[in-house]
Length: 331
Image 1 (cartoon, rainbow, N blue to C red):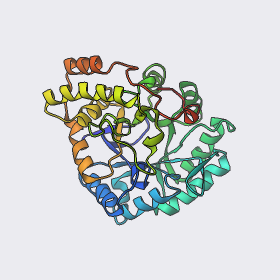
Image 2: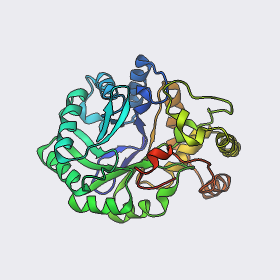
Image 3: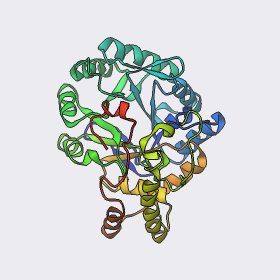
């Protein structure tokens, strides 16, 4: 497994990270044993960066990772944790809280659930409009100084917020959606990251399975599957979006790889400062994703991919309308 460094101040991590959210029911039913086996397989393949959120199934995901990581050398992997989203029984969102007191409270609970004495990268999941980012970052800086956190991260914020946060404490990386069909970061956010020496961990590289090559027309999301309310999967949009996948499939077949591998490799090829996160829930999907990091895309390959899926080609927002206002950038 290749390694990449998250920005000028962040840690060296595997060139591919594992996003664990899907292991806690975000995309439908999961198998606990298979989830743990997938984490083990990722670690054994050289994946070191594991991303979670304290609100993923109200703590379930952190407890699952604690079980999967038990007995492992703590220095052999990095934990990226998001906080700030408030939950109510029934998995309903109840707003967010990024006050300094809340930051420390969320962190204390995460450390306990994960069974660790530190978090490698700690980040607010979304900007709290009621709390200046300087106050939130200041609290994380206190926790870094105290040894409970190693690095500061951000998630889904705009260029101006990145600059304000970075002025308080160096930001290691921004976690944000970036894929062939979600490219809004290229306008202002990515240039700002590079100017300031900040890395990126890109989630949604397969657009929640839409461009994985495994989603088919007529397929419907099951109970509890977030994709059931995602605009890109709704009737009228999904059919168009799958024509983009068909175009990618032709390129992938010529390259001797899968559509998913091509899509992941495209993100990785956008810069050594970008680490794609794959939300593999099974060992089978993980095994498919891993070779993508070794897949070389030539200038001609990248041009052909760009022609097949130009910026703005996808139909539908990347989140339901109620969630779009919380994002630093759009699609």
